[in-house]
Amino acid sequence: MVPTPKRPLRVAVVGAGPAGFYAADTLLKQNIPVTVDLFERLPAPFGLVRYGVSPDHQKIKNVVKVFEQTAADKRFSYFGNVNVGRDINVFELRKFYDTTIFCSGAESDRRLGIKGEDLKGSYTASQFIGWYNGHPRFRDCQFDFSHEVAVIMGQGNVAIDIARILCCTKEELAKTDIAQHALDVLAESKIKEVHVYGRRCAADAAFTPAEIKEMAELADCSPVVSPQDLELSPSSLKELEDPANAFRKKNLEILKSFNSFVPGTRRKKFVLHFNRTPVEIMGGSQVEKVKFEINHDGKPTGQYEEIGCGAFFTSIGYVGMPIEGVPFLPQKGVIPNTKGRVFDGDGPVQGWYVCGWIAHGASGVIGTNKLYAQETIHSVMEDLKDLSACETPDTGKLLALLKEREVTPVTFIDWKKIDAYEIMMGLSLGKPREKLTRISKMISITRR
Ligand code: NAP
Image 1 (cartoon, rainbow, N blue to C red):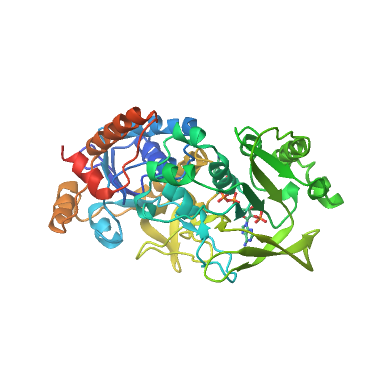
Image 2: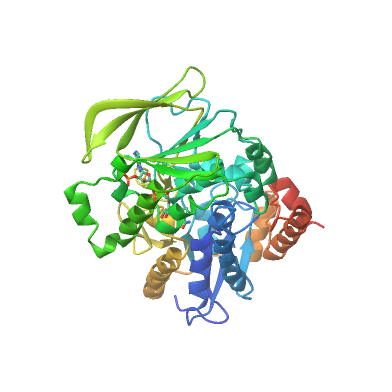
């Protein structure tokens, strides 16, 4: 098709996280007549920035200002509280839009698949992070922090986020936008030791220097790592010399500095363990201990050790969830694609694209999604001439269909009412905002 000012290219973006906003922004910057309608399942936009980024990392959330500029563009519309796949299916969406870009992120957890993973007291990263970040889906999760020891499996930045939140004092958390229900529970936490395990050696940890360094900067927590755990094999030492591994080398320097850390009066401990593969989470009805196999030079040794604990967190990466009707690779948790073009068994699916973690897997930082968006939109532009126009190029008709189905879309103006309300609520508590965690309450605020 050849888009004209009278009949611009109509694009639906599914998912209002960083990938969705960067995809919209990149499209609006192309030299073609285009409109973008961004659909989001939750009333609130910004996905990972709002519900994933740690509440004590407020600066990272400033990226929202960039997304707000995109939202201010007259060619852009936001429809929150619309669940694509449930309220409207992807084939119906196709009738109203020439192109659909799936940006639904990686919202589920990779699982260990070991015995005991479903015991009471065994949690996943997305449950805990969603809960303390006020995600409506996790609002009613229950966490028991009446024990002194918590164990986290995985050594990425998400695991470090979980450890930090467990190790922060009430005062450190109280000035963040952590959800009040979570602050109330964490303020009463009895956890004194947080043990973070990795299956490989210290040089292979996936966390990054800024994040691991922070663990030594908390008011009431000291970092602990055994000097033996920092002894590396000759092959690991050689790998560290690769410039691509500069962050790992820096990690190691920071870990070595933990050896001479003076705890002073700090009461909590953050303990790192390497070369340990979990084989079983043990307990009667509740997590009581975790059994690990000890590895040496990347190989299992047949030797085991156990640690007693009352809470266990799996944090070994996120995976995407399928959207009904859209091709999906369950093993990888992504929509199959080449340069952002959705592929099914027969080749590229006309008009369907994908961007962000649902296309590439959960890795990189928020800004990485900008690069992903550039690649996907480049593919959209290349394919434009062969694209067939949709049947019903009319958002009004789509909204009428949603109304018939009793779906209430939340516009960006509606969202700004929720935003203002949350900031006002936060002000009285000395927090940047107090998030609304119930969808019904959010909708009621938009009607004011
Ligand atoms: P990640 O960085 O991929 O780390 C996953 C961890 O889980 C690794 O230690 C990995 O170990 C381990 N793992 C994977 N499969 C395992 C298994 N079957 N058994 C045992 N361990 C296993 O993932 P993430 O921590 O979820 O983070 C996702 C992305 O978000 C990353 O790019 C991260 O940097 C980013 N993020 C950034 C920030 C920040 O910038 N502050 C904060 C949070 C998240 P192996 O290496 O042995 O596979």
